[in-house]
Image (cartoon, rainbow, N blue to C red; front, side):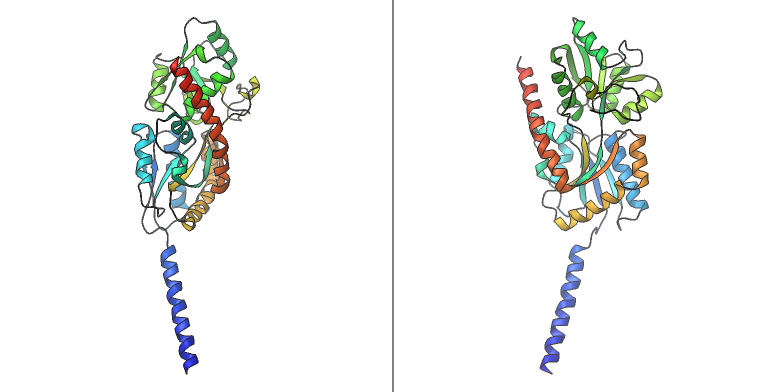
Length: 325
């Protein structure tokens, strides 16, 4: 009898503990909010909405993913919001390598280390584009014209410390042409596009997806891909690699959560992101936008960011030094 009671008690405790464990690991318990620190219509916004759409189609979660844009204050408001959110996986951030540039330049007080990595979703190459009637056919001609001009060629990008800014700084450093260009910053990619077409700037630094749309519209052309290798979407277009430039940092985009989010929740979110990124629909979406869909789990993704810290530190130091002149 006593043995039976003990066994019954153990069984009841096991059932209770199992029930509590299942309740503790139930996720999500409400809709997931995906914060995008950029305006609607850009590559980040489109990517976030495609992730939410595919998650719904594949029924990956029992709750929907809702995309919210917070483009103000050069990403600070969005990062502040996510950092202060409850670390339970219900508030996420879609962001990219701009984390490094803005932090090392001191324009944003948040580092990627202030958040928990979930995983990479995309690589988003950038390029230099000009108006369709610009006199240069490629980057080599642009640099030659800049060297001969008495006035700097005016380049536009969306924000201080953003990837467009830092990759162009890398371009100027690598080609020893820093004093031949002047950079003007705008609040968003659409504003930069308007400035180019309106003649306020001569060139702009643009993710390849947006550049593809501009080319199709017939009002712009790509001068050079800021990559080591070419892309099938842009056959014959010059690259940094073709100029002999290597060790090029690339823009890696993915998902993040508040810093103390439990590993079990991060694992579940990472598995979901992997399924989404590897889906035919997401792969086709990325290709159509001249981006590269590649899932990388958080432990491996972290190594890329750690390696890029030195690169961004050097770029930031160069920018600060040039600003003092």
